Image (tube, rainbow, N blue to C red; front, top):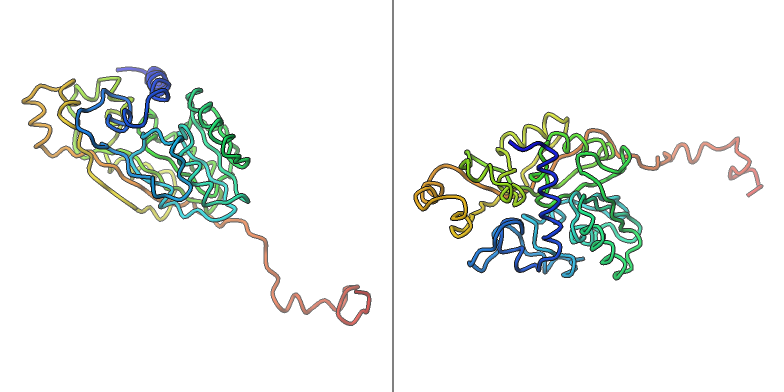
Length: 297
């Protein structure tokens, strides 16, 4: 069993290589990390091309959902994207939050940060920034974000509970998240779970769906909702690297399911808003030097 740091190093090394691959190669593999399939279709990712704010150069084909589509981002919001890659979800979020808002992307792979910053500079987006760091120890202060999004990243982190606690910490009271991720129903074959490349490829690092949702509840979040769920099928030519023909047949016919889910939840509390004066308070200003009868205004 590899240590937490060893697993992080595996993921960092693999995603540094992924940053240099094309979208087509990434999209036809498992989160870009494994040998590509000869079947020409996307295993996990959803199509962003019709999404407002989409920037093709920032899309490496690594996602498993469209979290920004479900995130209820408002103008002026501060949004954090966990595992921001080349910046795709950040730029979509920026379209929603507008120039008056702010978007922060966090990624622990230096080359991804570099690519994202170059993309932001080309676009002239001064309110989008990218910070290098671990999402289980975010380089962000407490109570900063109105919204957090993430696309197929939490499954890559060994200590998912730690990430969920960090999400709770950096969200403002009343803030919320929308996260797309990979989860399991049933147990993976040991050959898949033990392979480092499959860990970097999302699947081996995924946990049971019930455990995933329970960890969110345990962190104190409210109004947990499943916004989207879709089954994921790994092509046989990828599975054949790890399993025999008989094992592949058994894997494809047993009760084990691999799913992409998009989950929403809220941090308790109410967002700070500028208090509105009641009509009575507006009228009860007879002692003010600028009351209607004072003649000084």
